[in-house]
Length: 385
Image 1 (cartoon, rainbow, N blue to C red):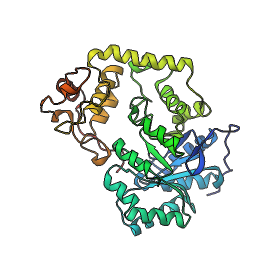
Image 2: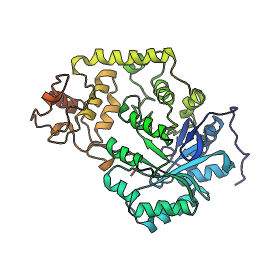
Image 3: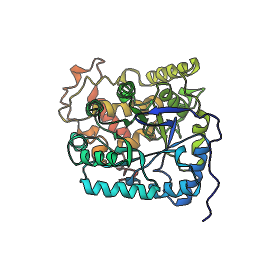
Image 4: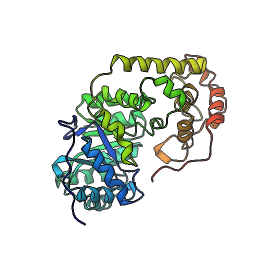
């Protein structure tokens, strides 16, 4: 097939932010896990993303054919290697030779001689961190860098903040990918620490996993007015200095916000601040005295119920009408292994150990029962893996 004309960004001087010890990246990273129906689906998405000034692609062997599709798209579009960066990932726990073969296959699928960034994919448990720092993973990652197949090593994590903090403190990693969302700010202090230490920070799926913000509820649209909820969510993260935000496009049209926000990297405006205050006020009005303030004083639960996380979902469903998102996330409880919470709200045995700890006097067992009644639905499989 004839090679197409080389792609160049249509914007002059696209914004780039430092990303650890590797090349600087655009404010938005194109994730490749949603354009998997066929090869021709991804190519126009890549073309539009590059035209918007983007330069960073995120992929993984666990995303099915994504790496092959991306490699072919970049080749067909004749994108110069110096003009883009690629982050791929390897799942923890594999042996050195298995991991080495998978890395070689990744490079082959992408049509590259080296990766800009290689992440431990889902450093979610203590044994994953040991694998990366002391075990077979350490040998594998060191070998990849020694042979110049990888510029820098990082990790993604859905795990406990204490584990993430230990990983950051190890000094082994140059970047980290975390769930950093307007409606789930728990890991933002970790992101700030990482940035202060010179690491790159990538926000995982702030649109989809951050609240299905591409399909906002009427209440949420009202709460964020005059801004679109997704616009406001993106701007909050960009204003905090997060290096780059992932966007998982399934169609070229999904990149509209990437195009309109590609240069808006400054602090929040007064209007944006007012919208955030309005958002918080209206959530409080709808939830009233039942709002969980996420202080985590209720923990630990004898039944290991993740009370704050489950009541956070209730906050979103009741406070902003984000029922679809809350049900989707709640449906993953116990269905996604170490990637998500494993104990649902109906595991509460009303032992009342949490009640005296809550500084707001919340009737936590009643709220957990309400959460389960509102959000329980047939289990949902993860998008991949």
